[in-house]
Image (cartoon, rainbow, N blue to C red; front, side, top):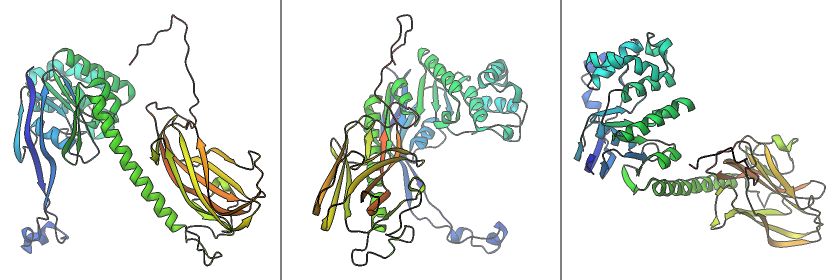
Length: 443
């Protein structure tokens, strides 16, 4: 199949030229003859690094990656907005690019005038723009505002009008950046319908999106960019899976680092147990008046202490879990002297501070006898049926009447991932049933 786009070892390097000092006005800089002298080359930044790929004509091609990974720069190379520092980019056909929200629009003139200006910039004659004008305005859903200055438009109106112009210039290659993120659900579905129509007509679509399900379902191929380099290329589902694995590993490192910093700041001083734990925490003898409104902290007498807490999934220690996955909480504890009154508790809170679940050994009718020395408490959750989100964990050791030995309040963070975007907190096991006359199409 003929290639619509061919990229051969393309790189784009930008140089940094920050000022070593600031001037109060441009005039003072020119008069002082130091404007150029205060520009210093501090090195180069490689936005796109040795990318080689071929995009087949009539295909939908997805590009994914974190912010700053080089996605928009690669699109600009394909659109001809900028030239590669090295390598080659060959494009076969007329390109229509919607890369930046409001790009090419003049804020002071009306939407009507901007449609004509953009249409001409994209290669149409004034007559051709006039012939397509009504269809553009109708598609953009801005009939009531078409004669108002675009500076009065919302971001959604900006995007709709820009997209409408881009798809009505009859391009061979349509390039769309993340600007669709500002659209509403109805218009996004209209855009996807337009993409499908373009594919049927044999046109090529390059799509950058953080909406990974759209890339998986709509694109024929995809690449994952990371710091300007291509990390994966091929089937969209495999590329997205590789990308999500990397994101999860990064989140794991971040959450682990954050928890470690919090724990270091809240360590109980074993030599002087009555001292304040931290400027931001409560004193060891003073639990909060309202547990469900208390801030992150640690308190307790220290007679029994939590030495370490770790969370594990099926593969080992982790801070990232998937809905329905097994979760094991391991708590290492220490009691220098024998105690016969102790309760172990665990609670889970969501990011808004709502208690999702909490229990302890006393609630579950476990009567303490004795404890001395080091030990381990293991709390197993067979199915973590929480919806996607960020959660905080409480862990505590206290007496049966509530006096704290060591209370860790919101000191441990974990994230729950899910391919299903439920709302709320809890996701119970469930299934749908329908009578035969109600039919659904599988995605």
